[in-house]
Image 1 (cartoon, helix red, strand yellow):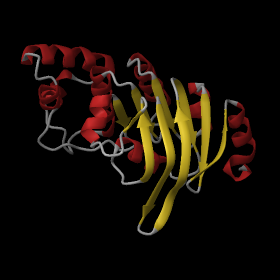
Image 2: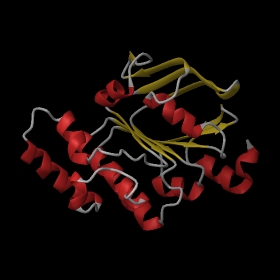
Image 3: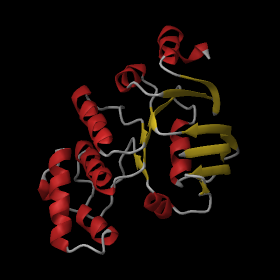
Length: 229
């Protein structure tokens, strides 16, 4: 589904990612590593939010020259650690632009159903996504977008940071409900990954892949931490 070849990122002369070669097929994949290992930079590069060298292939097609919007249209979706505000833009505005073939009332109906599943008050559908939104409301708005866009790949970037156990459980349930074929779950917390039970685990350290495996990786991390790699 997604293949990275010699993916490298340098910021301010510092190498953040160093020639990563990773393939993510169908299923759930965890990307783990200590803070500063390049995990979030990896997510941004895949989404097109970060310049990089090397190549990214999605469903066999090179997407290096595609914009964020084009990557999203192909079916790549990112859940952010810190969800951005969009002053002056509402969820309804977003989907009225994306779903030009549907009538406004149809879009409202779809948004109301998705908001109900995500636990977002329907009053927020037409409210600009500005700084008056709480972190929890922003996260729910992301869930609404994910449910309606039905992406092929969901990249979850450290969304377990600062989220309570019940909220995290619901987010995971909604990711599964989105029916994404590939989920890339980025985290440095073993307990989160243990609940997720991924099909594969990739460990990053200092911008490099230092280990690949399955659930046995968690036992090593729990016993020795990331210093064990």
